[in-house]
Length: 155
Image 1 (cartoon, rainbow, N blue to C red):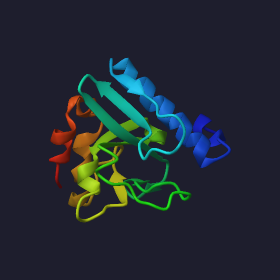
Image 2: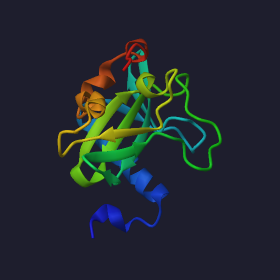
Image 3: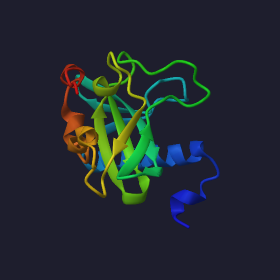
């Protein structure tokens, strides 16, 4: 049994993934901030002087075909969906293969809301549509972009 399989709940696993993201970002010399409690839509803040990015951290272990399906929805207890006024970036972690994706929120929270992204860190995806997120795998440079720059991303 893998270490991540031992968590008693998805909430515990989510907290562990948030810690992993913060450690990865801090290791790359980014200042990380954790909001107190669960009342914010974002999980982690990245502080770069005048630029403060709000990051929602997600994870997946669900393999489907060529990739992993990662849900980008709020937890079941939250009734409202995420908005671009609340989140700048999604950090999606594919746990079994230790792969991070840093996806601008504007790609999935735009006019056509995308609730699940297919991530293919192991095998190249057979569907051309699934390639659209592969360029964000391991792209820690997203954390140096401004909110305005991230808001301009479109599929």
